[in-house]
Image (cartoon, rainbow, N blue to C red; front, side, top):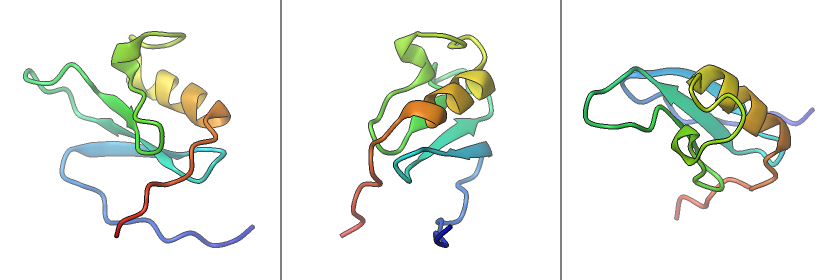
Length: 76
């Protein structure tokens, strides 16, 4: 398996799941200002969009990561 270089975790990030396409799905601590707690960095889907496990950010993130084929967005 090829090595991937991941950026440092932002403050508040509690977990990161690697998607099939090589992007990541991040899960953040609860925040009263943001209803999004899990977000895919490739396709920008979030647990706020609904779907299986959407009320449990970790469950949603893992499920999404298992099927998402979006590639990481370029940094430059």
